[in-house]
Length: 313
Image (cartoon, rainbow, N blue to C red; front, side):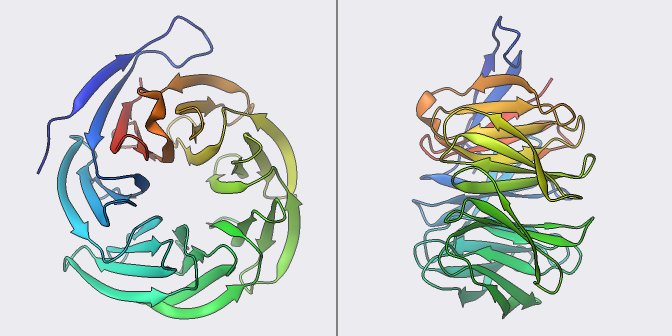
């Protein structure tokens, strides 16, 4: 495939803005939603909610190199480094599709419930966690992970994340505006109040903090994973829906769907370093991902049909 990409340079004179970044717009599909990454092959896998397929992009060259067809609209996605399998949530159908990137075929479709939003992987044991809204958080085992082994009953699970350092599972519950903390046996250890609509989380391994993007309150809650206490609340642009950790400089990047912008947060001070306005403004950015090998951010533009590749200086 490999359509020609549009590249723009963005710079501002304000010290509150990120300066001189280069942005390549990579055509993806209809309503690109989530991104997974294979650091070994430098491939991005992008779910296109409106076109029932997954776009494969070379992260080094910003070129589309293939697609996977799926039977239903795709939303969340995760890549298993051990098995080279993709786990794809089909939000409206409440299913999880498992695709082998080695065999280039679908291995299984697992019924989760009425809804299946995001998906994540436990790097210690390759257990799969599906955020299934009113159906709670669903844990799956096996290779591929097709067997439902546990279900945490919460009212509106929007995201799940495993902390490999503390061996704890964090679950974002939109109904209670909280993050629930569980141990490996699924015993509840803490219930931490965050902002309204916690929609995405990322773990900072250097400071041992958990950053929670609160969609409805347009804020980021910073949770200390040792104490399970909120240590900071950071106001960002409207409707943050994506968040990622920059392993090179320890900073956090947040994509705000309501304004089409990216906020950079200092991981040590929790202060805002700058804000980048994407163009066009109707990009409606969803997932944001950092590629340390190429020092790039990749942002799924739900409204534009593109993935923005942002080369950091």
